[in-house]
Length: 369
Image (cartoon, rainbow, N blue to C red; front, side, top):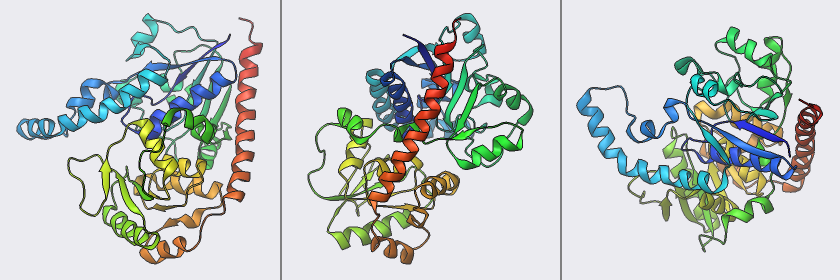
């Protein structure tokens, strides 16, 4: 059985990042390969930084910040740690370039996975001096699947372009990523996020029975720039359809306008999306799971995530679900999504994306070394 290593954002406190890691690994395993997550953990993703990281302020304010946040950080961190332990097949831990030299990996092929792994603001390449997300430690059979630049330009071009030239095939998550590659003389193919390659039956295996018995509207708001909009829209929609309001909530106290607010495990997060009657979100992966589970939803301005949100909506002909004000929200509430068309589109995109993966895997299979 051929072995494949995937480097991606698997150790961050984010549902979408953990689930896209799981999804790509699982898809490759279902295709008959021994797929593993390369356990690359740059310093900003380390457990120490996860628990004790703080804004760059004076020492007293830093201590107060850490002490106040620590109990919640421990609770949140545990949610992801348990999922990784149970569902991700991980290599030994690598933290820097020297680790890759000291403990060389010997996979038959390598993928840079999805999420914003090509975004130099988030992959810490400049900070750490390590180009692991660009597979510089591998000598052959290098590919990317649905990697995202996160923005419409490539920062730090020269050294990164040289790393990308070593890839056999490149695929990106957004159409803007294809343009970024073209601008620097490279080619790439747009594919869908790996979470969309798995279907709802694949996810049912891991999220269990219904968590909340009442009918409810779900709020998932990782980008927290428009909290008041979420509140107003949620109250309005919940009143119209007679729904409870459930919020994925990473704070100590429940807002008084919510019926339930808590920070679920990764499995519970999937459960909440699957059984929701309506969803309000500003998250790329929030939208991805709405599409996968055929949920009625509205997307709200998220500032830093807008380009990714808009692109996935455009891919499914749903750009009108991105609303800016209460009038647009009310209009969309009266206009349900036709999921027959969306399912046809998703089926087509899955086939196209699987063809790209299969093309990569043929190169690995044909390599006799």
